[in-house]
Image (cartoon, rainbow, N blue to C red; front, side, top):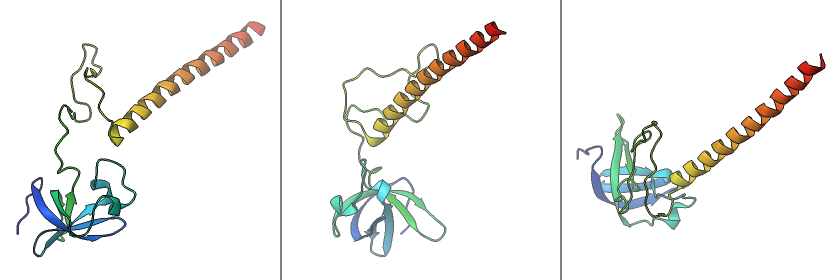
Length: 148
């Protein structure tokens, strides 16, 4: 069977390991879903999300030269209603070039969004601290130059 990269297929979980799950798409055609591609949330135990014999939808991510098939369950899921996914750097922009934040009701955050929020808060905090340090250093330099 020739699999098309990017296409979604129905398959059956045939095996589970600590790093992923094997899914048989058709008899004799098996691919692997890495643990990071099982769900949109953090997965520490695959057995909490999948069981052997379970029927799942998978998206073909890649088929390498050796015939190994890379699959994703989370990318085969539909995007939740009301949610817009923008590519990195995309999305609407304001006149000053900064990204415009869409005005919408708060949706539960995905791990990626939660991480991005945490990173933005860290960056803002870091910028504020660097500004404070710069002021202190400038004040010390001014006071030393006055002493001379």
